[in-house]
Length: 423
Image 1 (cartoon, rainbow, N blue to C red):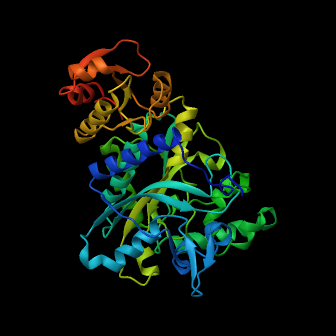
Image 2: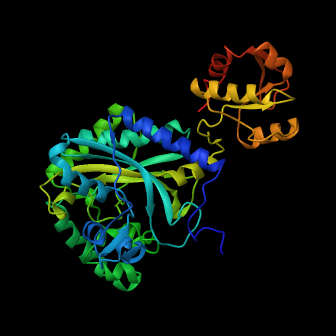
Image 3: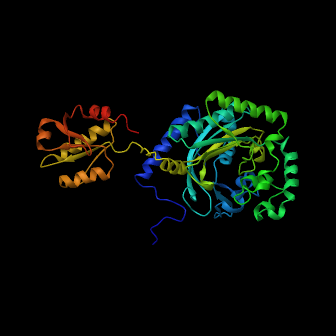
């Protein structure tokens, strides 16, 4: 029996699991502060959802989807991204939801690829979506949410790249111009870019092989060819970002990897990480996505943020990841007659909202202290015959030799006062 998890996946165990849990909690917190409501969609969807919305020429569809046939012969796919499932769910339940709808999610996604640091086959994402408004203020809201989350993590080497990629009014003419330009360099394009040149020529700008070549860098830019409506929308986005205090850099070569994006496109990029793994968060506007799914026209904007990569970026910047608040106190029983008092204290702590545990069997003092450390407890409470008789407990922070005798009736408040800064 192979004990290691499948290639490209991780077992999440302490302390990393608690560090990721802390990121989950902070994602929930910032999303709610910005007025988003929690959404959860299935881990797998009908394959058509992603084939139709991501585009037949996208890497997601052609190379990266985990697709399988169920026992009923239906083609299903593990979700490779979060936006399309949320839009599908919104369209299915729109009559029960507010408009505009502000949803967020914290979940896993799956893409097949060569596993490496920051590019797992099962990864964790935090995303937000605003559906039902074409207002530039919605673009600002989702970008500001991602910016707040990343800044609150202490990241200083992350830059927001911003662009507009037009819409169905101005982009078709630009695409033809770009195709005509790139046709002159067809023999210098890699096979993927040649194959999708007419279907999705904008992808050449983020191609791993061709994106940095001189002729690509000299190609015509969509930002110079926006229609009046797209140009006005982009102006409002930039003004809104400035008003919100969100710094950004204009990046005329920025495109998004999925076909459904229009107008605003953005990425948060960390120079602490290299290559394709440097993008911590990507998103933009997708006003035509709902219609691709057969729904009523429903403008939308959102982002997906990689939590695994955030941890990597924090490590590269020397930022100590915080762990989710776990076990606060471990109660140690010493000597005859103290075990029952210890169990009573554990129940008292838990009833008072303090996470607590104790040894499940009689063990020597040193063994119990080692168990407390391995359990991640921050405080140790020692009860011996003297403390049991006096109705008290000897409390100390783990790793600190100084102890304080605290009445059992006061121990909950004592711990809450000293542990309030954790998490």
